[in-house]
Length: 615
Ligand SMILES: [Zn+2]
View 1 (cartoon, rainbow, N blue to C red):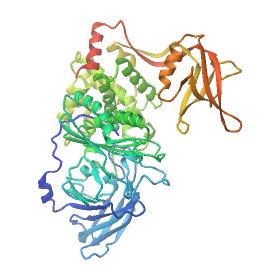
View 2: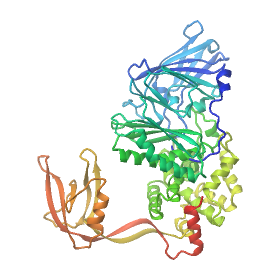
View 3: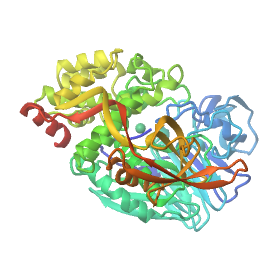
View 4: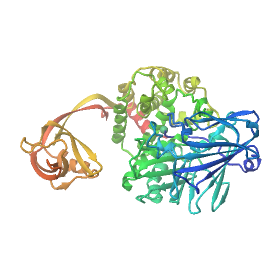
């Protein structure tokens, strides 16, 4: 679920398709007549020759790496011949319907419920891949939730018409082929392109940015109007400009759409995030304060947008001809998700949005994150098993996956004396393969070695196909960075305590407390105390880092400090207590510390600079 680079011959809707598509799927989605969060879907079918066929709704869609069974949300499935007689149908499983006398089939109808409201389901679909139907409010149309395909006929053209309230606008990267106030008609080349084209219908809140030759649509649904498209557009612009520079000065797509759905209720899938497509991405985020939402969107969008490079333009056969009901996984999640995540962070230091020190902190966070997963499962094996056996290890694609990208980038810089990078490799792979030409899973490592250096084949053998731990010390040493698995530092402190943010009260709360604190036994801090003020400065989630810096870390051990806490009484009331103490010195152990080596050789400095800053 995320992002990248591309060279595309892009021609989404040639006019010829519209007139030539006599044997095509023709769908109608009726957003006007909504019943209990369900809409009716009608399909005028293409010509079917066999006497039996199977109609499929996806079990899984690209980018989610999870089994979702979208067919669960269909009901009242009916098939008709040209005289409007019902044909016999059988439901084979959640996602497939067998239709008898299929050679006489002309029409199918069914109703579709949405996935967002399904609180009973054992498996909740990740919302950016899901569907929402709220009459007269919002329709999130991930097309695979509404429209399917017949066996062997995935490559026929699709025409679909959305019947809509007149004041609604459909945000999508697709161009409308025909529009009237009450209906939009779209044309796509085949089922893959249909699934690649989500739409969001609502009363419009949109803005369009012109960046690097591309038209970028930002569309927002914010139920309580906490944030609008103009604000998000203004925030996202600098990230996209940076990504444009990183990709060589031009965005590799003519058009891109950010479809942003903000949700005011606690969500059911337990996660927020986004899903990438070739020309758009769909976001599902909490409707929080504008600054917070904007920051969330910027950090996720950098990843999603970079998916325009991979897998969208560099991918294996099983992704190119995706089997929506019996998908085979590729072994290259290190590339699709790992390299994408690496680029989404590297662009920020490369384009000077982050200092090198702040960037090293982000790399440290990946190392810490990877520590939560099993490092001995080879990445290719985990990738192949990401839907089942290794589903619990999937999250490592965003941690160790990014570090594999880092290691490969530094290795390429080292072997080329600073003249070749992972970005160049991606460009070369996009030329070798591309949107319409897939690689064979097993040939990719050899191909990359042929394009670069034989040593790179050894790198893949050891650290991606093999189970060896990435050699952090060696990797970082190449670019004059010191890596310390464990480092000890002394720090002025209130004592060791952990704070958590409590959303209902919007207060910081002490979650964990060591025995050593700056406060005596009598007035000791307690677990569960709300931390309200330090030396008369009010703490909020936003202000806390700066206040801790000025009132604690920048002071000396022994200095006086006054803090106010909110403490719950026996009767459940919060009473404010004023506590006095003196700052103390504590020794902290820090893992995986990365620092710039002041004694780096000229060679190391050159490689560090080219790794961080060249294009
Ligand atoms: Zn991703």
